[in-house]
Each structure stands twice: as structure tokens, then as C-alpha cells.
Image 1 (cartoon, rainbow, N blue to C red):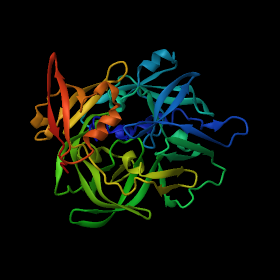
Image 2: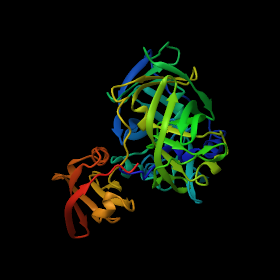
Image 3: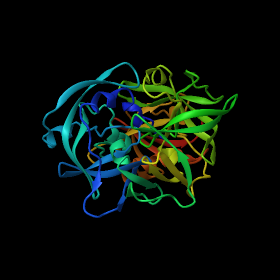
Image 4: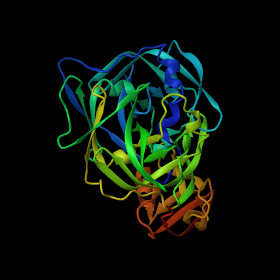
Length: 412
């Protein structure tokens, strides 16, 4: 991936939902009338699933469908005023990353609507500051995260290639034909799965992993036997994202193999966060790491929380190799239309570093295609497309413009 500015959904894993959920109990989503199922089209932003949701009959607002959160999160603080929210209770949140805290509000009286599914008098948390900048990461407006309360209410099928959700009432007998059923443990409102990994000098390691559809990392390997997960022989220093507690530092490398159910996937891009930034701060469900959306994009997926399982069926991308950014650039989208792209980080020794790119520079064009005509998704795909591919870039530094050839290099 081009940018790892946000590791989206590890942000609320520490005590956040335990602070809120005993105070406000949320109703589940339900269909009105006799409806039993519905198909909902979604937007794919950096590979994440973004669904339209109405709040108090206003919207639609863009929410990331995120199994890694246990309560609905409004990440755009401007909605606090535009929705005229009342009965707000202020609180301090502490999360993963460096040692900082963040103010947020809770409110118990919101009505949500996704497609024909509604939930009334629900609780939500509203961030006081947009520290995560999910909109800049996704390249489109993002207003929040929708998690457990949606998944517990339905059987949820995600077809990444066709970009649609299908949601079914829990009392229907639904499964993926020719799909592989894999048991889940639903603990503290989040799904965990047992997998087998092959890592450097360690073969067939059993791991307990959080399924985190709101994560932009394919895998996050946080700990093994209560110590930092062993690094592979080849890795790069990386900024793995932003949590409630600040930046999440670490490395990117490859895991030799991961077996989930009957599927064995090789040479998977993995994040290895600093132990003190993530694993040492997790005091709830003990785990080894998490599996993110770039992994599940290779499957047709059906979540069935009621029966504590997930179904996986490989799609046409299953055997395609996992790739990582080959430029060394991290970008964020800005502007009213999120069509301006600025450099937030340059990896030392990378092609971008050798090209002379500096933090704050703006990407103007790639191969004579104006950047404003490209989505952040498309730019990410270009920069992770092919080893030794040459790209003609046009960049701006203030009023100065510079141009030249940048040759991609596979770094891990």
C-alpha cells in the first residue's frame, strides 16, 4: 500500500467499549415489515468497505464496516453540531500507539438506518477531534465506523469484487455454497479466529487473530508467547498507522505462510508493530495479532455471529501475490474533492527518497495523467504494481515544480 497513515480499527480495542456499553445498551438493527434480506452496494476506499448510513433521518454519511469496533463510532466531530446531538457525556479515551489521550463524547439516543435496516435509540461515541483523518486516508469523506451492532443483527455477506453486501435475518439458514466454514470466538463483541502460521525459524505456530475488516494492514503480528513477534529476515521501518494513543510504529515484512481453514496463503505482507505500542497495551482479550481487509478481499465472505462462524470462498484474486508499496511514498488526500495528494512521509533509501521527494510535496501527475483525475485507490495500485516499473512523475514543492523518472523497487 502507498500509505499506512491509518491502521484503522485497532484504535478502540483498549477498554473503550467497556467504558461505554454498560452505561448505554444498544438495540440491534432490524428490518421493517416482512423483509428478510437485502443487497446493499458499497464503496471501496483503499480496499475498505464503506456503507451509507443515515443518523436521525439525516445523511447519508459514509461509515466503514468494521468488525474491530464494538460500538458505533462517529469519527467526524462536525456531526456533533450538524445532528444537534443532546445528552452528551464527555470522557477521556486511551488507546494504542504512543502515550496520549483523546476526548470524546457519548450519547444514547440516536437512530441509525442502513438500507432498510434500522436501529433506534442507540448509543454512539463521537470523537472530539478528527485525529484519525480517515477521510484523508480513504480519499473520500468518512464519518465513522460501524461494527458489532450491525454484525450481530444479521448474517452479513461481503462480495469484494462486485462491491455489494447481502444482509439476511439471523433466523434464515444461509451459508456460502462451496465455502469453507471456520469457527469464530466472539469475545467482548469482536470476532477471533485460530490460524496456523509459518514464520522465520518457526513453523506451524498456532495464533489467535482478531478479524478486523476496518484495518488497512493485511496482517498485524503483535506478539508471540508474550514477546514481540519475530521479525522476518527482510523488513523495512514503517509507520503502521494512528491509534487513539498516537502513531503506531513498527516494521513491514512478509509472513511465509498463513493457514486459515482449508486455505493456505503464502508470502503475505505483514505489519510488525512495536510491542510497547500495541501488544503491551492490550489488557482485554489476549491475541497474537489481527487479520485485515486486504486479506479478506481475496474471498467472498459471510459473517454469521449467531452461529459463531465465518464462511470463506476464494475469488479470482486468491492466487495473486500480495504486494506492498514500491515507491517509499506515503500520501494523504485533501481538498474539497479529496483530489489533491500531499506527501506525509518518505522512506529513507527508497525510490522516492532517491528521487528527492520531501514531506509536504504535492503529487501533480503520473505518466502525464493528472493526479486530480485519479483516486487514492488508483494511485496506491500504481505505486505497488510492478518491480522495476518506471513512472514519470510531476511534483510540486511550493511554487516550484520538478519532474523525472521514478523506478519502483520491491523492498520486501
